[in-house]
Image 1 (cartoon, rainbow, N blue to C red):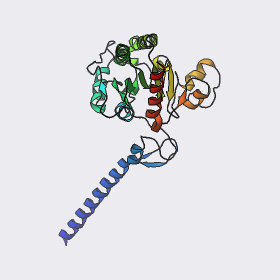
Image 2 (tube, rainbow, N blue to C red):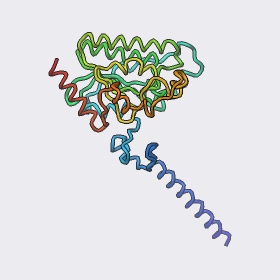
Image 3 (cartoon, helix red, strand yellow):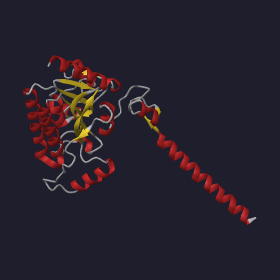
Image 4 (tube, helix red, strand yellow):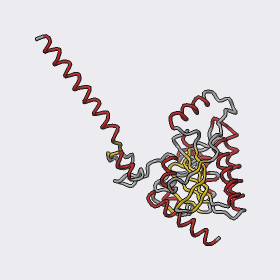
Length: 284
């Protein structure tokens, strides 16, 4: 009798453990859309280019997945992979945080840059990744963008930058702000060389990135619903002492007021970029 009771207790514990494990697996396979509040199957969302199949909300993408979606398979050649982030201000805990993120995300900094092809057309491309310190721009990010543009000028190639950032990186102080001038100067040299620069604004694009290279494209595209601006709405309202229009920092509002040229859904982005590149090549 005692043995039977022990067996029953053991069986109950095993079943409970199995149910918890099954529940954990189920939770790991599902997600909730922050916009429409619909519960979504993660694999379905992933297969839909990380766009909500219910409301069309464009979820944030890693640089790695973005590159895989935009460039022809097997054509991407990453550049400047060995640039090391330093701690010029001796900011406490900064390098430790960098190393932790590098291990967690398997990327070295907040941008990947290199060369590839879009429907057979060669391009220089940079893709920012908000998974790494919210895509903030420090010295390495600014240097990688500048080097990419300079090499694109030598190769006579158009440049495409996918922007996603929280702005300049506070841990690097004034040096991070200097990247605004450096990257803007590089874009100016690209224009002098008569080469095309396409800026693609994704959610979010803010701060010093918006105030520099992100806003300087010959053609500026954006994904639907992207938050784009310099500072948050509360900061702006407190600074100017005025109420602001609803959604004034969304891509749709900015398109209506001439800040961007076109809103492009993710499923159409590669096709639209290819069309622009072909048109530019024909005109050139």
